[in-house]
Amino acid sequence: MTNTTLTRLDPFSVFDDMVRLIRSPLAQEVQRNSRFVPAVDAHRDGENLVLQADLPGIDPENDISVELTGRTLTISGERRSQNEAEGLREVRYGSFSRTVTLPADVDEGSITAEYTHGVLKVVVPGVYAEEKPHRIRILSSTGETTQVSGQDEKKEINA
Image 1: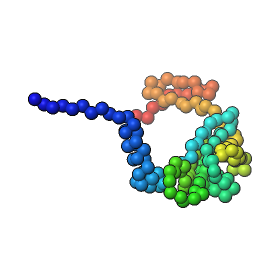
Image 2 (image 1 turned 90 degrees about the horizontal axis):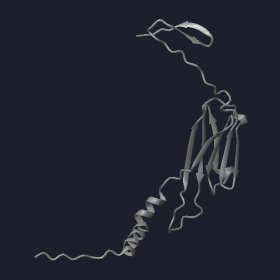
Image 3 (image 1 turned 60 degrees about the vertical axis):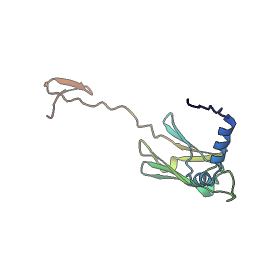
Image 4 (image 1 turned 180 degrees about the horizontal axis):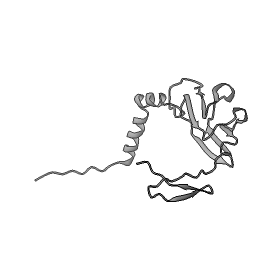
């Protein structure tokens, strides 16, 4: 005869175990060393590209940089900790860099950046102004002609 004992699970003990694990020194060290990666939204507004980055608690004049290199726009900086006290630390600190490749060349002097209520808003005007569909010629081995931009052209294929 087998003696089977059922133990009732206490949901509060499971919760206590999770809290204990979260507050362990190892968990605190991992959390302290995690990188800060700001959330970024990018959207098209007419012919303009608008980027918004959540950067609360950062000094925009000393700790944020917006740079354009060719067609690459980079937002970088650092969120600095105000103190190194022990305890629960959920806010991430450290250096960050977010890069966006623009669809076309732009005039760097026309780009604007504004920091309001912890959100950096970068507007790249006219980046979509030249965006127009271009018709691509289709090559075929049948020798038929196709209409491309109002001209008759012979279809070709390179086999």
